[in-house]
Length: 387
Image (cartoon, rainbow, N blue to C red; front, side, top):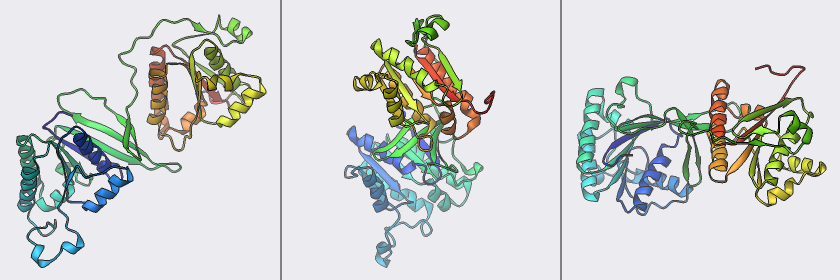
């Protein structure tokens, strides 16, 4: 984000707007900046509960609550506390201006625009008031994040006013955990990666997994990687080339996973790292299979040359899975990636029609890093799925 600009984060309740806003402000306090949270929608206690669930303290933040607590609805306090249905928009705005002048914050969160919309009562006055807020905050050298619950009609939205707009979404599924994602609608003056990016809310805040893009990398010229199975390597002209991908397909029990393990073990024997992402089988099953065949899988796992990760398709988002693969390659130097199976990967996708596009991006990215990718796919029936 550029400093001294106004940004908008919009999304339905439960998409993570409040958590994102608190992370934005707490990052400012970590940098020694004064931060202000202006709330018309939630009480200060509710915001503190959100922060407490993430292990955060709001002592360094100034939380300005414009919704009075129930005990505050006393006659002598009616002129100092705001209730959206009882006060004029101009009075509300003036209260905000006075608090900003008193605190002199560098970062401000305004929660939420839906309350301002109700006070304005018409789109023209609402837009003018938001413009007034924008000019006021810009004059005070504030970086502002506005929150909106996306309940406004299209002609009342303010995408043209902020410097940047982010949309947060929550996608329910018929089975498994819901999926959350974020999309940057616009960001003036700077390049950004378009499309939807998965995000996860967990203890400690929001983690965003950017959509993978293979652009900007070069495919290194590499040699072939042998499997250690003499006959197979002779059949393949020495092995599989680095920076390529191979699909092992066959019915259950044909030896697909065992063959893929040979490539991981061969890489480990050369001192290279391999990662196995198991969607269908458990880690214990793979370990037991390797012991039964006399494969030194346990030895290489102990040396951190082979990493075995069990994936739950119902819980892990596609973006989070790609993040694990990217971390393995970029940070840990993995040279062989095995996905077992592609059927399980398909089940992890919220929208199956995008599987080919996402798989293309992932494999292209791995190829350009010189990684050998091995995909295992279970075949059903006599011919299997010809797609």
